[in-house]
Image 1 (tube, one colour):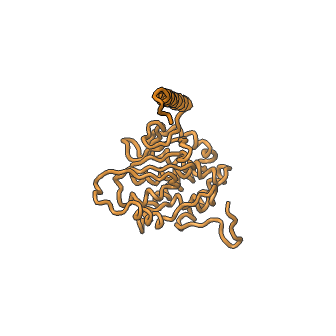
Image 2 (cartoon, helix red, strand yellow; image 1 turned 180 degrees about the vertical axis):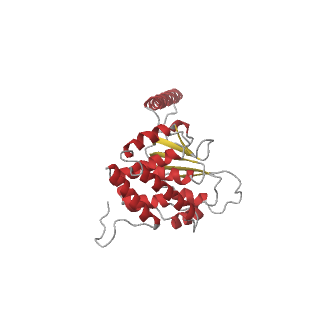
Image 3 (cartoon, helix red, strand yellow; image 1 turned 90 degrees about the vertical axis):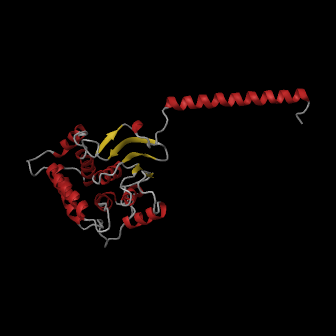
Amino acid sequence: MPILPDDLAREFFFHDVNRQHLQLLDEAARQSGLSRGEVFADFLHMGVCALSGGQLEDQYMDVVKRHSYGKPGKRSCDTLARLYGSVIDAMETDCREGMQDVLGDLFEGAVSYGENGLYLSPMPICRAMSLLTVGDEEETYRMKSVCDPACGSGRMLMAVAERYPHWEYVGVDVDVRAVRIAAINLALRNIYGYLIHGNSLTLETQRVYRTGFNGKGVVREIPPESCPYAPLRPSPKQQQEHFSRDESALKVIEHQRADDDDRQLRQGSLF
């Protein structure tokens, strides 16, 4: 975690509305007896479940149990419901320059503090990079896919989706909180894509969220093997099969080389 000067506030936001959101988050933390980080992680999990149209109801009920103590109206879950409504309202109204990442701003400014080197690129930088990378596509009606192997809260995907909302978007990140923020960001805008909790380097995949309206909700969790973009690591059995296949191929090559050497020796043309 970076060391901040004494005269610099620990919480810093690009969206002023997040100061109100932070107050609600801290209130929920006091009501539940959990830390701010734990409450925020649960808030994201419940937020994804709430957008599933009942498809993730079991997960939702498991998480909300931790926030259901106390009198109705003064429970942590009641405060988080107000926070959720306020965040969605801010995402819908704060569109001065296109899509805005209100949740990612709250996460970076009041929860992660650069934890594990997690810093989110500002949206203007993401828009500039999308212009440099994608450019102006002439055949805008054609569906293409865009992948960010370290997507964070999905800002790079959102920057491209502002111009090409009908494309398919794929994001991978090792932090499940960032993945859920990205899933909420894309799902609320009905952008079709796959948000993968995994590691693009080691090819490990923990879970996959599919965003876009599916008849019930705008997000659902699918098995990793059902995702065409998931960086799946081969199972031990598959690794053994690949090794055996490679070993057999190597033996065939060695036998062929030995046969060639014998043939050349008989012909006297080895040297």
